[in-house]
Image (cartoon, rainbow over all chains, first blue to last red; front, top):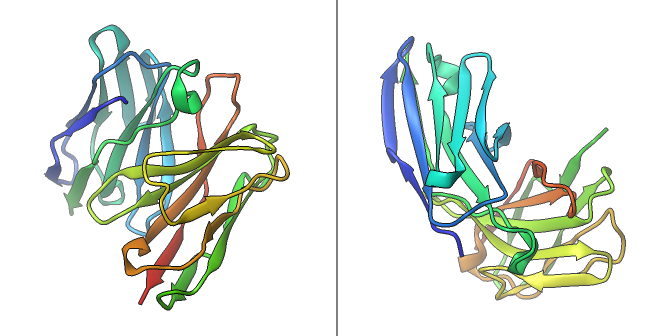
Length: 113
Length: 113
């Protein structure tokens, strides 16, 4: 199956700082999602981004499928950005498991006021 | 539009007890899946289904049963709970034949004592 590696594992920021989270994956993918897991455990869809760049407010994401990585940018970070960020590539739907999502271990982000 | 609904949100079981975690979606998605999340880890796939009457195993299926009698519902059964099954469980759904994002429920926090 697809191997997923996220970096850094932990990140501590002061409010207002910018950051880049990286997701490397080992095989070609049909899709990739970024999630934010808030301190209450809820998984929130941030981006569905099989390739290219998308932006949503202070967050943006870029996936370069040919080079097997995706980046999540957080600008002007706020304390509410704290939590765990997961990337989850989705394998080929024609293969086994019908294109399951494989999760990385996450990046734990802490934003201090 | 409720999306993906999981019940209960919290549950405490004694070792050896059985229970069913419920998952329902109202988006007419063919693909439904169950994941578990252990501390400090990403989500791992337990079982999945590509339609009514069709289920298959994921990465960590031992100790769990599933069935899919309708498109909307995908219950997860623990036949004899063990402390190793203490975890947070997430249900997800997405269309099978369109490459699009997966939608996750709010999670069920299960403790087995």
